[in-house]
Image (tube, rainbow, N blue to C red; front, top):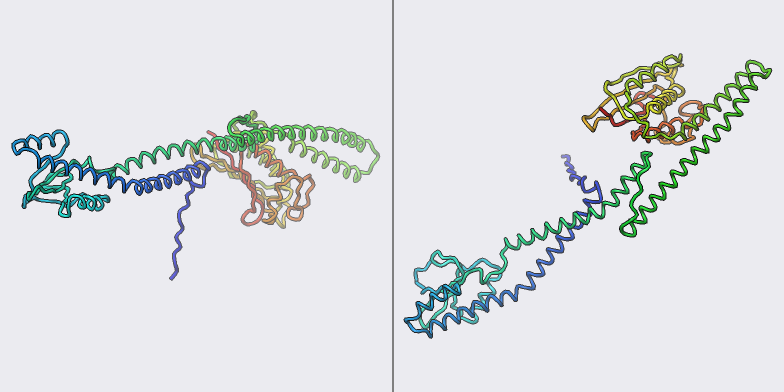
Length: 454
């Protein structure tokens, strides 16, 4: 017989953030501390409480018995009335037919009985209810006559279990509120730092973090602000350098192109040199695209369906490409239309060059667009697939690295290896998910997931 394995449910909320972990740890610590405190108080105060209650009972019974013994017979009724009115003490003769219940069910009662009997006599009786009247009943004798003395329970009992529970509940609520406040204060700077980091990762410059609070928080925020400034400066310098180098390189290329046109060369030599110059110019263009920033201020409502139809129409004029489309309606995203069209164009060109169907001279490319989810959770998914030989699984991650070419897997490359790196860089600015994987049945599938807008 096979044994069934039951998995314990994972506390996803506990792993989701520092706030709940801190709150839980503080709550557990407070609960354990309070439990230890209650236990310690119960142990420490037990003996003094027993002594106090026993002494009170013995004193009341002794004084009442002495008062009744030494008072005149005619004044006993008035004395009993005074005891009831002022002290809450009632004295009744004990009858043989009295209905007597057991003593109060209290953890201190056995010790109280032992101490009271040691002073008043072993025949002293205790009850919680006599003849239907609730109270704390103690028996005593005057000569041969037996009496019941009733005290109000409030005078001899400590905190009840319900009272302990009530106080424990109040302390627990206050402690949990304090734990929530402390957790929030601890988590707030980290949450602010996380939000700034996420915004910076999306290509935006976050507002400077406040450099105040505890020393560790001040240093972390100051270091983050300095890092943002440094990286922004590096990014700006790199863009300027690449743009300058590309401009300086294109000037001699233009002269070389002019010299080739005017030189007395054979047609084969001229075509070869012009091809090399064109390739060099294309590589310089890739450098410029890679260095070009994508500003969020340029984002507009982009109809992905129309954009993909334009890309498919542009590439369908090439003789070595067959494009099939499957596009959903109402697929709108927020982005830079020019950059997104360049992204799709790069992916299609990559598939055209390296994704030709084995045994054919034609690249079969599929463009798909779908919309899933509802309301704010709607996502637009774009897929660009080819029917080539694909890429070994262990080398897929290398495709996204700048200046990387997998010639063995995707054919002979003629660029600088920046195609997919440019695509990833642009999509990162758009907050999109970019996935590359092998297509079932052969070929490479590139998937882009973006948040849809109405």
